[in-house]
Amino acid sequence: MDEREFQALSAQLGALSEVQREAILAALSAKASGAGALALIDQRFAVQPTCGHCRAKRFTRWGTSNGLIRYQCQDCGSTFNALTGTPLAHLRRRDAWLAYAQAIVDRLPLRKAAKRVGIALDTAFRWRHRFLEKPRDTKPAKVEGVVEADETFILKSAKGSRKITGRAPRRRGGKAKKPGLSTEEHDCILVIRDRHAATTDALLPDLEGKTFSSVLEPVVAKDAVLVTDGRAAYGQWAEAAGVLNIWLNASKGERSYGVYHLQNVNGYHARFKGWLAPFRGVASKHLASYLGWHRMKDREGQRLSATRCLCAACGFG
View 1 (tube, rainbow, N blue to C red):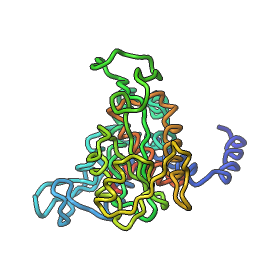
View 2 (view 1 turned 30 degrees about the horizontal axis):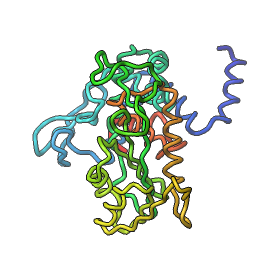
View 3 (view 1 turned 135 degrees about the horizontal axis):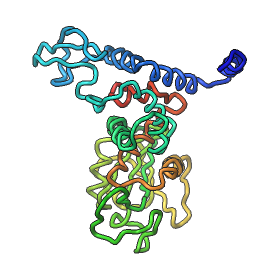
View 4 (view 1 turned 180 degrees about the vertical axis):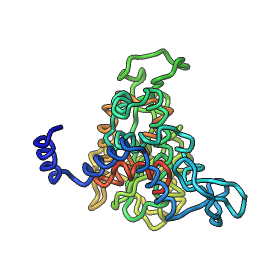
């Protein structure tokens, strides 16, 4: 790049958003040596350090190893670093982690992510699910106030499986053999979301009342107002739990009752399916990871960057 080209590039930097600037810094750090990723991990770990083996908080410094500070636990005697016990422990090519985290932020398909970062396709696949392991399980402890709950259905997929049991193979994007929606041919996703955008979800194995209760009971606050459709399972749980339930019968054209509606959660369903579309089908066994990925994107919004994604992958929040 000559001087004139460099000056033209510099002039454009002021127009970049905060996320775009962080992406460039992440890429430069990754190209340099990977030290940027390790320094970030050590820095975030130091905020709330705990032993990666027994979760104790009493330890002493024990030198450094492979670019990370090492500690010795005063309780169990084991040595550990910031990555011990995290999904990224023992992963190689640390110089590429920030660049791969940016590929997660950019929602790149596996082949494009592998090409951008310079890793093998099977490595990109393995890293994706390591990076998404913590976000998959990161959900709010409670949803409060006006809470909307509704299900959405996605056709089950055995994408990537060598053998398919229980049904004949079908073309990607096919249709169910039987009319209607059921857990026999579809993955049922229950989404629970309050008006503060706190969102949790669950994959339901069936549509039994006890299954809905097991998801609603620990997360819906007792003083919440639960807005649902006319499915009996919601009302049964709400009555047993002492939670006010307002249900809307969409088949009769009931879209709202005063300020109560399901537009918030239904809008979330639509955004999730639109966000999922470029992947051209997700295997049912990996769907929970993609739900967590989308929750992270929805929660962070424009703040989501390579550095925040890397911290989330380590469980640093």
